[in-house]
Image 1 (cartoon, rainbow, N blue to C red):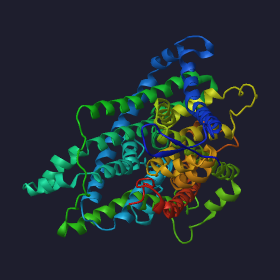
Image 2 (cartoon, rainbow, N blue to C red):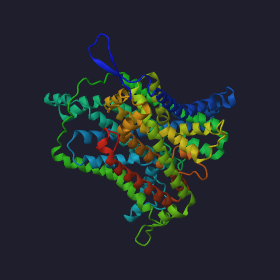
Image 3 (cartoon, one colour):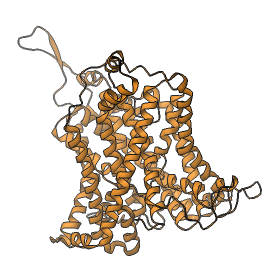
Image 4 (cartoon, rainbow, N blue to C red):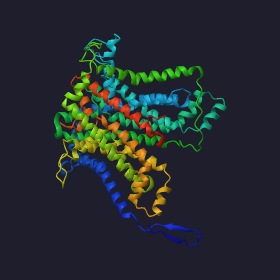
Amino acid sequence: MAVSISRVPGRSDFHMQAPAKKGLPSEKILTGLVVAIVVILSILPMLRLVQEILAPGGRLSIAAVEAGLSNPSTWTATWNSLVVGFGGTILAVLFGTAVAILVSLTDVRGRSAFVLCFVTPLMIAPQVTALAWLQLFGPASPLLKLIGLAPPLGTRNPLYSAQGIILLLGIQYGPLVFLMVRAGLRKLPRELVEAGLAGGAGRWTVLRTIVLPLMTPSIIGASALVFVSCVGNFGIPAFLGIPANYLVLPTLIYQRLAGAGPSVLAEVAFLSVLIGAIAMAGIVAQDIISRRRDYRISTTSLPVEPFELGRYRVLAETIMWLIVCAILVLPLLGLFLTSLVPGYGIPLSLKTATLSNYSFVLFDHAAAKSAFLNSSVLSVTAAVFAVLVAVPLGYFIAWRVSWWTKILNLTVEMPYALPGVVLAIAALLLFLKPIPLINLQIYNTVWIILYAYLARFMVLALRPTVSGFHQIDRSLEEAAQVAGAGFMMRLRTIIFPLVAPVAVAGGLLIFMTALSELTVSALLWSSGSETIGVVIFSFEQGGDSSYAAAISMMTVALTFLVMLASNFLAPHLPNGVLPWRD
């Protein structure tokens, strides 16, 4: 490989120059390919969605908007979405912030085990969370029957209400607030806290006047993210709201599509944009609030010394583990016991306990068997594809900083930032007709679900990959470039091996998220393309809670095993890539 040595005018040193434009064509080709993938996955479906609302059939019209605004159910569902959105956000923020302060600023023991257990509900699909809680408190609850506290059969489940939805949304997303606030607490300046204590302020005063004000950005950011998640959540409102006729926008869209099919696509497109507008309003409000005050910290120091709880430490630790029992152990125990009973309302005993529900969904039920195969293939394919794309895409975003890479980053974030129902409707509209030129029809097939998964979950692999690039010493790649290595060779032999652990960790997150996903697949599935989330929902809607519980327990067990197995990657990962790692 020829390398020239040239003298720089005005300097006495020499520098090496790589052959001009070596490897440039391959970099351009890869850049174009990555940009094309982002456009196809993120921009095209959104453009198609807007077209359907403003120019259906190629002609400007606001008929869909007028029809949506004139329908009373639209306003009812919108109000309900705002109620559960704000209610779930407030509960999650209070819950997650309190636990983050307890774990991060005190000398409680067993943090690692507690964080793993506390974050686990965030990794479990919302519909599984809803099913677990329904089986815990329902009149047919095997657990309540065992202890003699079950209400009479036919009694209304108390979770079938707006309050029940808010409660479960708060529990589902409280760990998300915990993770974001705890990340902020780790950057809390030690000297400010010590100065407050040295000045005679008590711990509560320091917490109120120093810690919480400095945590405002983290709390506001978490609030915006949780609000978007609550407004776009389908699983919990579907399981708890539909039986009570308490519809939010995602469940209203589902009922409209299930009842009328493609003929109402223009109407549900407007409803999905309405959800997106509410979600974006929350993000904009968060940005405006954050700008009103300067929260920057101009000092760095060691982490804050934990507050000693003294004789209250045992009480605090007891509260910690009671929280784990309440949000994780008891619901999953109720779900597991339900999976062992042969039918609705039958008390659990040594004589009635059976594994036939597991056998039925694994070997006898055709849709369930198909769902396991479909979800496994979809989640693995989405994870592998996202990892392969995230490495070059992360390279451009992290090491080729310019206006177009910033736009590219925001574009990839869009399908995940918006509620999943928005992407699902956009995908339906985009592929309602065969793909031009190749005349390929993917509507009503499993491939449209794969497309939606690729678009929605790509960012889960990109975020940790970009973080990994920021922590890599770029001199290795630069040395290879000076030595004449082309871009593809550098990417294959240097860049990919260095960022592979974080990219694979992102892929694992995608696998766990997509395995039992429901929000997107509930609107896109067809006969033969059922997913695990759809089958769980169908069983519960049909009254077969024992079968739904059996499938749910298998997905929870698999998710937990993947979480534990991914810990082997932890020594090679930046902090925060695996959210359940302390």
